[in-house]
Length: 303
Ligand code: ATP
Image (tube, rainbow, N blue to C red):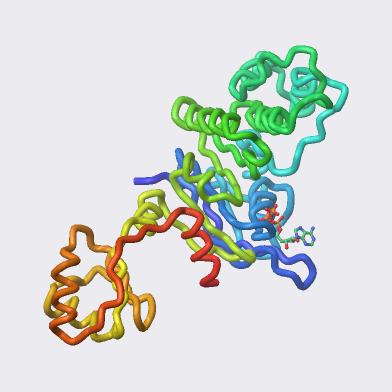
């Protein structure tokens, strides 16, 4: 049985007459690496800003650690966030910047600074000042900031943005370690599905402020999995033959002339032969799968 660490119902955010978030429901379970995916302007930051307490929702409600309102405010120390960039001092080192935020947050155990710097791979930055950091290093320092005070839940808005492929892979390892070794639940947003696929076990796909899909990694794999595409001159008749003669029921009619069979290990020769015998014109039979980005595009084009 999954233990919900965060639940939200009908979260809505209006900016004047513009609806940035529209009745969003979500549940994040303890131990999840929960990916929020959406293209630019989809509402990812707005959602994370609400959940991290930076802004109020116009409508709807949410609870974290089963707490709301004032009770939740007292639990906020258990949540690490990188939603809006913390203002780092340009002339200070990584360590000095984190020390400043420890003091701000009332964290007295300064040994944490070295631990979080090590976690994000910034141990060796020594005297280098923030102004001389690469974009990737700046992002890492932001993540280190979110990890101060050993949070149980961490929310990161586009943490992999601007980081090169090797850096991104290192960061993913960091997320896995936090999740598996320290039992940290993570919520991570991105506009690139394949980027999150490599790390998340659950996915919330949003567009124009609305939830388009909420699915597990297994479900996502299934949605993108191989299928057999049948192009014929009559999908309706072909579907009857599939079911009544060939006993195939796992399929989807995608157009008047196209059917996609998701059942695996089917005999395509037998299908073609039977269709021809039944007077169905066969244009093409081939195997196809969807890449993650194609799947994402397909979902968004259906909105
Ligand atoms: P991106 O990937 O570009 O960061 P996003 O998915 O994080 O996008 P949001 O930043 O949440 O999207 O914005 C969602 C929508 O709300 C956008 O159309 C944005 O212009 C609008 N929006 C965000 N903040 C405000 C604000 N303070 N006032 C008015 N509109 C806003």
